Image 1: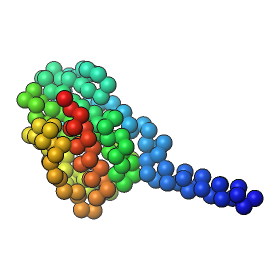
Image 2: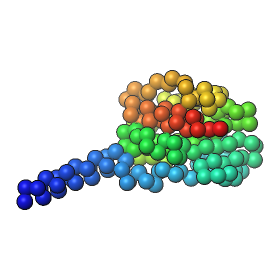
Image 3: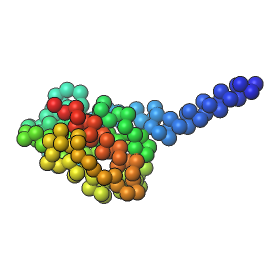
Length: 159
């Protein structure tokens, strides 16, 4: 009886920890789909894009958009992964970084958005972005650190 109680307790703790840290509830955010909302956030509203491969799209203006999937899937913020999109122009420089849907707490996430963190990599090549030191946002350290690490991981994989 004592063994069963211990096992049940451990299962309950494991389930709670997984739910709090983006366990299976975060699965829908692992492979974000590019929508018109994301295009607008990337400064590309009303621009046509076509999917080149999984997680990569090309616009009719020659801009390539990369999803952070799978590179940032295991990088967790306060409540889970912080998937994003990175738009790279024909000149090979980042034009914009925009978040995809995530499970971060809205108050913390608003601090990240208000901080202009997503503009920190504009004008850099992916290689430069992967190495750039960017400060976390005060009051949203976990969420902003996850964004920074996700940009770095994704930029390291942009060819």
